[in-house]
Image (cartoon, rainbow, N blue to C red; front, side, top):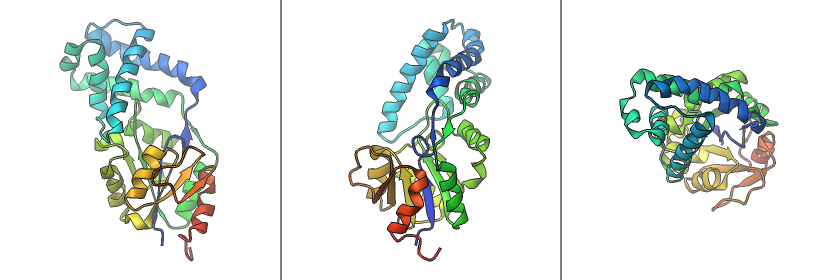
Length: 248
C-alpha cells in the first residue's frame, strides 16, 4: 500500500504570476544594489538583469546534469558575471544581504497555488499519508520557498521539503529522490511522485521504482507515468484506479 506522496513544485502545486515580474525585478535590483556598490559595481537595473539571467542560464545547465549550488554560491556566481574579483572579496555579511534581496524578491510577488493543489496536499494528510516535496530551485532557494508555503498556509502540511540548493543535487539525480525517501521513511514502491515535467518528474522516479502520476499534457516521460491527470486535484482518483489506496 501507498505510504507517501511527493510533489513537484512548479507547474504542479504553484505557478508564477508573470505580470508581477517587472515589480519583482525592481525590488530585486534595489535590494542588491547596496552590496554591489560597496564593491565598486555600478550597473543599471537592465544591466543587472542581463548579468543575473546569464548566471541563471549557466546554473540551469548544471541542474540538467543533476547538480546544483547553494544560495551562497549562487550569489557569488551572479556577482562574478559582473566583476570576478569582487566575488572573491564578498564577506559572509555581503552574501547574506545579497541572498535576502535576490532570493527574497519572490516574497514581494508571491506565486499562485494551482487549482486543486492545496486540496491534494490536505487530502494526503487526511488519508494518513506522509507528504513530501522535491523541487529544483533557482533565484529563490529553499529558505524563501518555505516562506512561500507558509504564506499559503501549507508549510506544516509537509513532512519533508527537499530543495536542490540545500542538497547540491537536482532532479534528475537519484540522490535527491533518495533524500526524500529517507525523510519520509518509505520505499520507492510505497511512494508516488506527482509532477509535470517528463525529463525531471516522470522518467527519473519511474526508473527508480516509484509510482508516478504526471500532471498536465506534456509528452510523456521515458518510461511513461503510470497515470496522467489534468491537475493535482485529480490525484486521488488516479491513485484509486491504480489500486494504491487499499482500505484507507
